Length: 245
Image (cartoon, rainbow, N blue to C red; front, top):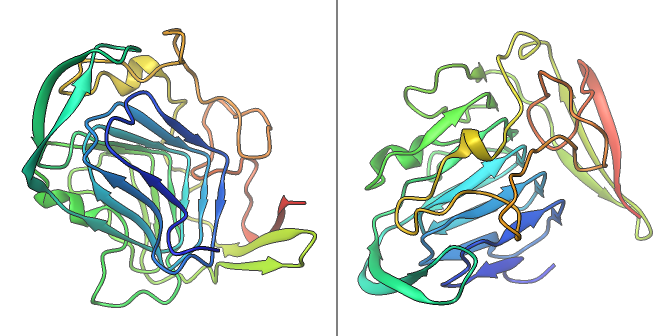
């Protein structure tokens, strides 16, 4: 409930933003400023009108729910540092052309989308470096990443996403129609994510061990063919989940 939910300023190499609930932020839920990756963003609910302002590169977005829009910008006026893996020693400087991101198994449920903003991943088509996407589900005019091999696109379906704040408890509600039961997803892990372009560091645990995204926002085990978004065991129909208490 602030102007900006989280501000990830430069040198956030190795950071992980996981299992957070964002809503009612006046600016954006999260702002990535002049980072080169790798950083992990997984199992979050982004519920404000603006979800992500991305002025970085090298992020991995896995199993998130996005109910708002994206802002994607380069930054060619500043050379900012990247480091040796899991260390603070600076090994280089670079500008930000954006891209070099990964988007796997996310759920896009825009609320009242308009033509002024970008919903889904279409904004990354103009980024300076290639990004990678697969297993994402796009509702209500959210646009998929061009060339994404296995998206589910339900442009004319409004899931009516909303958040109920009961003071002592918070719920998310949305309605899903059949459409991603045949979505080709698979578990995401360190090997699949590869390495960020500049630091050449893998997306892994703080101690350098591999990571597997095998649990959801609520701590439940992921299936071998996991559901898109932060919640496993999704079914068609109205869904109401307690996400904070």
